Length: 183
Image 1 (tube, one colour):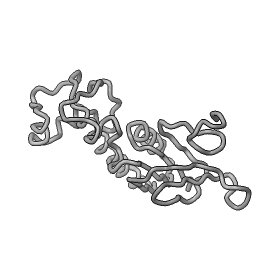
Image 2: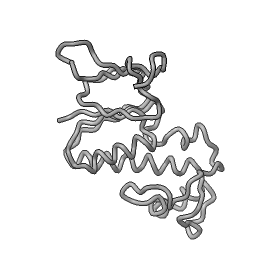
Image 3: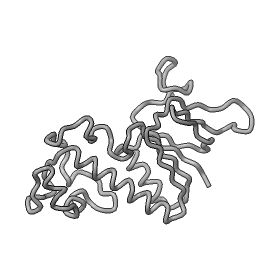
Image 4: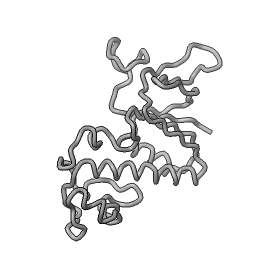
């Protein structure tokens, strides 16, 4: 089974993960998120946003992951909606809602993808509080052609071929620093 790592499990990482699962070829996928909760994404977590801060994107603009953002909202309890002073009958697809709600949607959808993936023969590992600090190719030998990821909490098994995504750019010499120029 091919191994894949996704570094950064915010919206970009989630949509990448979703696309890999929808391809249907079972993979061993390791998800790495430096934050406490994978799936939420930095722009939508409660550490960086107050409940009254609105997302700059409406439901209609968010690509659905099995269900639309609006449908997901409509499925939430009245108590959940009341936390944000939202009335169920006022929900619509062009509405701008608090950013933290969108983070809750993405976290929920992450686990929906995990459930589907595992049911389809994928092996999934979620590593929260795992900041990847280095990504490099080992020297010649049995691991040639593989890539190792080093995080503050542990290092992974070799990945071959890898898929690594996130907002940080990978550089030719195997670090996230531009000292030697981009790949």
